[in-house]
Length: 385
Figure 1: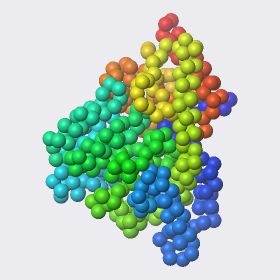
Figure 2: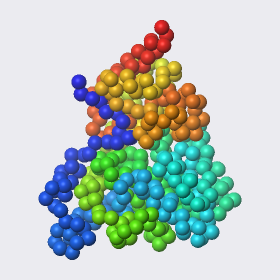
Figure 3: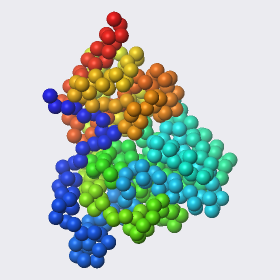
Figure 4: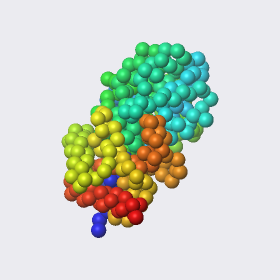
């Protein structure tokens, strides 16, 4: 029996078009992009094209606004830790983030020698805008970092409004857009985003490649967080991962031609999955059902069903889903995201995440909903005896 993979928010398969573009750089094309010979120039040209593709995807003004990294975590670290020296010098020392951010943001806090305040999250899964404006008004806030889409709930955050507030009060705005790319349209120039993190393995590029958008406004303010050669405009030293960068650029190019169609497909799949579970008479709730969410992530609460046991039973039945962020798997504590939204520990531990991707089919949706329902029923029968 083939496995049904519905954990695309953790990672998604490499697109065929992307793999085709990468293969020459994994075999016969071997030039170092810093070399002056023809092979090196060929590698440099491929990197420049990828940079242009990414900048076009997110609406950046210049290709050189894109710095390639190893993924979302490094991009998030570069955004906060790289901006910290300038914030200290400017006197606008306070950083605002939120209680539901990815660990790539939250786990930096002990290592940044600046006061960092975390905005509360409302029960609807949206960061408290009023709290952010109050802090911007009362404190010397230099940087605000709020994710565009939460990785566990799928709820879109009000990044347009936050960007406006940052402009009003003279703060820099960073957004972790790792779960947003490919699932909503973002134009950094129109919104007024200063720093944006993205990761290739969330939208059809391979693991281990990502990027940080750095606007012209803050380019001279950010410092490297590692040291070596002068690659990536001196901000991210080390020999470039040409194959990965080419793959990231190819994924961006492919996405520009199919994103709207895929977004519509994800929304259809989400509605179908929920409808099937209701048809089977399954006792469950759709968390954040009436909120503005991306279509590929479903957060589902099954009362009385421990998510870890449900995941194991689904896995035994060849269905891959998750309980929270893949980065939090194995943790004994309930999801920090769900508890920040006001969930009780019991509800948080009975919530699972279903996430669709570009390879998901309608047939898989139909079969997966049956498998999930049957596993839920088995667990409830086990505990009734």
